[in-house]
Length: 258
Image (cartoon, rainbow, N blue to C red):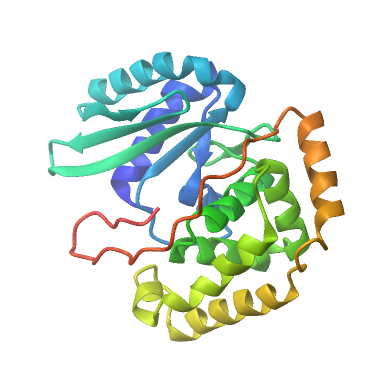
């Protein structure tokens, strides 16, 4: 794990976990559950959606904690459910991002080495909806890791449907097909060699062929959404999926991979 990121995780969770319910999410949560070991761009921390009103207080708390630790910190982007912090280490001049998100979560966090971590099912749901909405190379890597860790294809789709009321397997099929846009160099940026990259492409192209055709998944989707409604986790439909972009070049500075 990146040394600066590990420091940020400890500081932020010490400031936010107990009083505001935040837990480690994103790429580092995948690593914490030993699902995938890859480079990550930033530090992601999630809290339950029903605590979104506490975001301003949480932001003030964590900015103060980072500054008390000798780091520069400021809120670069803020909304009701999302805050992006820009953090600077004056000793090295390095910059990093910390993202605070209020999200629909189905389980309490679990204990990790660095502090609370999202439950594996919440991590899996988030990774599937990330693949559905943006389909970056890292999303294919992470979901492939979830399959290797023991999640079935059916369970991953079920978790995504429970998380996102707009999740649709027809769109998902298109996103799966986009795995072909990524060449070996783009997977290598995350530490994956040619053979592993080829295996990931094969996995998602095969999965695409196995997805239900339009109308075939309606009963499963309805059941998933019914469970989501009962648990209070009904989400609005996703935004329009965005095409994947090339990963940035590794220029020896902060690796920009989430």
